[in-house]
Each structure stands twice: as structure tokens, then as C-alpha cells.
Amino acid sequence: MGESSRPCTVWLGSETGILKGVSVSRKQAFNFCNSSQLSRQHEVRTLCWADAAESELLVAAVDGTVKTFSVEKGAFTDTRSCGDPAEGCFVGMAVLDNGAAQVTCAESGLLRVWRDESREPATEIRVGSDVARMRQNPEHRHNVATGGKDNCLKVWDLEKPDKPVFTAKNLRNDWLDLRRPHWVKDMAFIPGSDKVVTCTGHHQVHVYDPSTPQRRPVLEATYGEYPLTTLSLPAAGDSVVVGNTHGQIAVLDLRKGLVRGCFKGLAGGVRGLQCHASQPLVASCGLDRFLRIHSLENRRVQHKVYLKSRLNCLLLASRPLEEAECAVGEDGQEVKEEDDDVDEVWDAMEQVDEREQNLKRKTPEEEAENSNRKAQENFKSKTSEDGENPEKKTPEEEPPKNKTKKRKKAQA
Image (cartoon, rainbow, N blue to C red; front, side, top):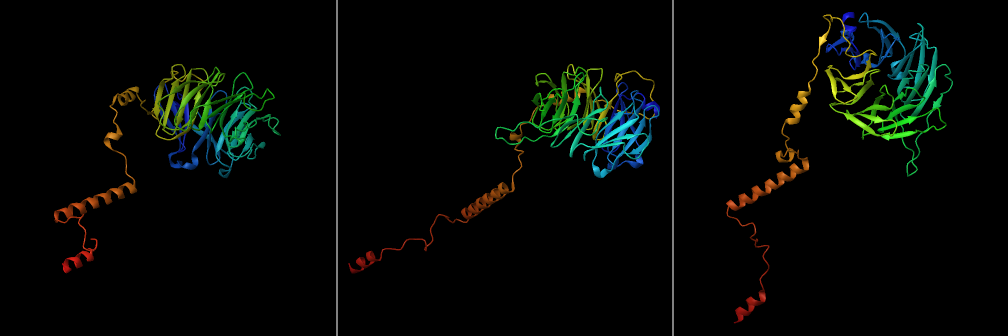
């Protein structure tokens, strides 16, 4: 299994509990799991590297366990219980001191630091309820950010966990002086500064600057009409890539808040998004079961791989994605990349107007009205065949004759 895991440069976690590795250069995908233990309880929620050398992966599951996967061996080497399923799913994971400590955060708001092999956490922080995401600062590893539904952005120093280093303030009230809802879905630290960028469930992108006294966003931008689910920063750090629940991905400028461009080809909600550390590439995955790698320069699809399961998260290696590797063993399953010719065929097909085909489905009220109209038409046609005049009045309906005229005629 080690021969199949070493060439993989993209790692993904699925709802069925399968860890998937993809070798972009060889167009091959591999499943790493125990087929006898596949269930929703082992659903993979988040991934992170266990060390700087990227030789091991940490895989967090719904059942509260964190598994260690060895890239060299191609197998899981350790399992650790880091929470209770009743506390909610993991929303983030990080490592400290080059893998000596692990940081986990659950939806309930319990952020824990685990050291060595102890079953009890060394540090436990309550960061608020309904947490949607926890992210680590790549430059200052002891700083993490959290946020969620009605839970504003907070930046924590794990060496001083008594109170947050920065707590964002909610947006100003609207023109009716009503409180504006806040729902942080994802965040990232902008490299080379203390700024933090967030995306919300109300299709907003905010930039906060903890180095200034201002606690409200220093930049506000919106994209689309649907909730944003995830974001990632390119290496330059002057833009942000965001994805929403309708499969739309766009690049926004962090200086002016304008949309630079959009990516096409997605057919489901985006759950995982990550820009490569050195290449102008961005990888995405989600409910349509595809791994897509787009170019940030021309926004075209470079690779598209179907992986058979709904995907929750992804993790890219820092080395080039198409790096040449040695021959792959027999455990790999080759996957065919989708060709752009398929999209061209669909675009070339003639468009059919649904109004001409009368494909609109009738409601029960319309069907009842049509049946009554047909019944009346059948009744009229039947009476006309029998020679009856439906407009002829009955004797009871005729007006009474004038009796005075009859008496005058009799006297004459």
C-alpha cells in the first residue's frame, strides 16, 4: 500500500468514511479504509498534516476519533479518542510543536489541546456555541481563529487561553435599526499581516484587522445570493477564493472587494477548497463527487476526477501536484478524467422550448375544471342528438295568459 500512497498529492475525506488519495500526474485514485467498517459513524470531517515533512495525515471522524495515516506505509498506524459524538462533529484540527500536540474543536464549542498519549486534554477552552470552523495561523502556530452561527470571529492564543486575543464586533444595525444576523462559515489568516478574512452564511466576505482598535470589518463585500461555505487564500494573499452551496466559486479582490472572476463546471455545493502553496492552482470538492483543479490564471479546469462518494474535505501536498513519481503498485484504481469535449457536446445541442412542448404539469384544480368542462360539452352534444332544444321553456316557466282578453272574446 505504500507504493500507492506515496505518489498521491491530493487527499480527500468522504461521507462514507473513506480516505481517498489522488495521483494527479498518473490520473489514479486510491481508497484507504477498512471495507468492513464503512458507515456514517466513520465519516471524515477534516484533514491536516501531522508533521512538517508531510509524512503522516490526521483524519478526524464523526465518532470523535482521530486516526493517524502513514503516507510511507499507506496504512493507519494509530487511533485516538478526542471527543464525544454528542459534542458534535469536528470543525477544525491543527498540530503544535511539529506534531507533539494536537488541537481539535467541535461544533459545541469545546477547543482542546492534546499532548503525548494522555487521554485527558492538556487545555480546554469554550469558544462559544454553534461553531462552524476553526483555523490555525500558519505563521504563528499557537494562534487559532473560531467562529460560527451568531458566534463572531475570535482569535485565541493557546499559550494564554484565558481570554481571546481579538473578538470581532457584530455589524452595524440596518436602516430599520434592526440587528443584522451574523454567521461565520470559514476564515483564513492573511499572510504577512494580522488580518483575518471570513465568509458568512449570508454571502458576505469580511476582513478584520486585530492590529487596529476597530473591531468591525475593515472591508465588506458580497458574492452571489447563496450561503458561502468555504474559502482559501492564494499564495499572493491579495485575493480570496470562495465557494457556496450552489456550486459557484469566485475570486474576490481583498483590496477593493470586487469579483475578479468565476469558475465554471461545478454541479453541487462546495465543501472543500484549497489553493496550492506554490502553484497557481485551486482544488475543490463537494456534493457532486468530483475533484476539480482549476487554474487561477485562466480559470480553466486542469483536472477533473470522479471519486464515487460525496466529499467533505481535501488536503493538498506542498510539493508540485504533477511531480513525477516511481511506478505505482497494483492497489491503485485508475480513474478517467472528464474531458471538456462532453461539455462542448451539450453546448452544441439544440435548445428545446418547454412552452412549445406544453410540459407544464397541471394542478388538481385545473384538472377538475377541465373534467367539468368536458362533462358539460358531452351533455350538450347528447341533448342535441335527441332533438331537444335546451333553450325551450317548460309550461311552468311560460308567463300566465291574460284572462281579461279571453272574457272579452267570449262576450263578443
